[in-house]
Amino acid sequence: MNKLIFRKLFYDILSFFLISSICITVIIWVVQAVNYLDIVSEDGYGLNTYFIFTFLSLPKIFSRTIIFVFFISIFYTISKYDNTNEIIVFWNNGVKKLTFINFIFKFSLLFIIIQIILNLYIVPSSQNLARSYLKNSNIDFLKKLISEKKFIDAANNLTIFVEKYNEDESFEKIYINEIINDRSSKIITAQNGNFVKKNNKYFFKLNNGGITNIEDDNVYIINFSDTEYDLSKFSSKTVTQQKIQEASSKSLFDCLKMLYLEGGVDVWINDTCNDKSGKQVKQEGFKRLIVPFYILIIALIGSSLIIKPKNFNLEKYYKILTFIFGVLVIVLSQVSIKFIGKNISSDLFISIIPFFCIFFYYLSIFIKGKFSLKNL
Image (cartoon, helix red, strand yellow):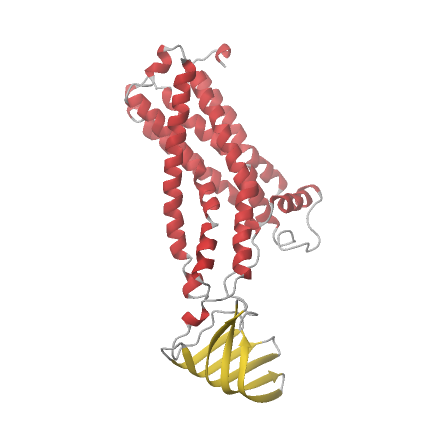
């Protein structure tokens, strides 16, 4: 019988978690997807690139919401059991309150494993894949950004101006300014032109114009009747360089080994591990590996709803206080990330905080409930 009632508790918490996490993840994803519309409207990427890039952000969003949704799931389920007197079924079948708490505690280990797998492998891989896809995509929506008498600078080192945009998608009186480097640039003018696509690459087909090459104090002018200007060599102004949160866990922990065990990074190894990124690397490592253990704390906080205070006045506000305390712990889990990276001693202290909290909160539950060791 005990197995059946614990199985029902397991499925009730899990089903609420899945429904809530899907809803919250989708809502956040939609809001974030709206913000990402800039890569189409301002940076010139196509809708296909946009949808793939935004879709790959789903694992990151889900990972960020796990700890909060899990706490809400436990809190809601136990509160519902208490309000409908279903919780009495456990006590009538001889289930000890500490056994109930231990079940929630063990159950939370599953979510820690899920979060760690997401943090270490799935989220960095999906974020890196999204960034790589964006980096390797053509600016295939550029022609939609061009409008009459407006300077367009969606691509790095490239500015385009057209006097007239015709209904057949051709242009008149075209001006293109390309910055090659600090010492040289190129100015192209043409009477008319249009976009053409060859081998999945876009070209600007120009007619009746000239090319002015400027290098230091030298100027060279070449006239042409028609030419094709390759746009595939330009990249968007959208950040395409890999960020630390997109780095693989192996490279991240290799860098942490150098930072903590070898005294630091003396040379610039790569974009992830260098003399300037040490603090960010430490914070990312803490977020991926230590923060998930706060799930154990909020599992204990949520399950402690079954231990009612004897004071009637305090009992009326017990659920509210428990909820607030759980939210504060979740906030602490995120705020503590910002304090990582000062020195080894403080990093070690902050890293062991969740484990101390687990021990002392569990001990307080044990003492408060007057449990005996045989019930462990």
